[in-house]
Length: 216
Ligand code: DX5
Ligand code: ZN
Image (tube, rainbow, N blue to C red):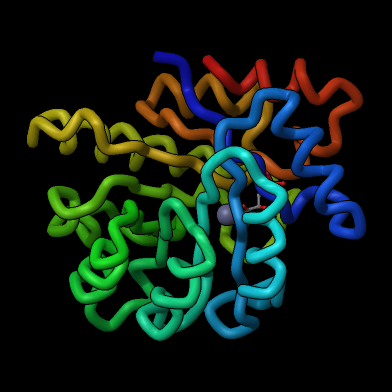
């Protein structure tokens, strides 16, 4: 199966959110990636529930919420109730990751865990049989438009190997940061199958071609 594309709205023209959502859906984006940043876990503040509520109203495809916030369990109920179809939190930000997973699942939606480039796979291993998605950050989280870090590819292969050996081939491996028509090939080869992209797809003159180039 070809990869899914989750378009990161952080990279769009936020003054024309509705138009940008329609444009990127028409270009073939499978999910809309919503980056929530709290200025604590990462050095940036993006948007929160009021904006995502509006995104949900305008969207026809699933909402893929990426929480880059400290102590994420505090906000799981809020982001679930405004219509996230999956919620991904950072392993580094959670005191009790299992409790966060359970809280996400209690809303009947999928749970994802993300790791930063410096976090080893061994730390996420105990949770691989409990979640539906693993997000391997391919840049340090916080800003769009950064350069892909190739060292992260080995972690993707390692996670894919572990998932396969557990019989959990259906778990998505998502990559986020610096994904474009060149870096996508390495991600796919390593075993990723959900490509998050902000600046590449929204910055492209031909968005149809850009989204298509990520579906390998
Ligand atoms: C970065 C965010 C990303 C970001 C990706 O911390 O998690 O989703 O928007 O942007 P690009 O595709 O421009 O690297
Ligand atoms: Zn993201």
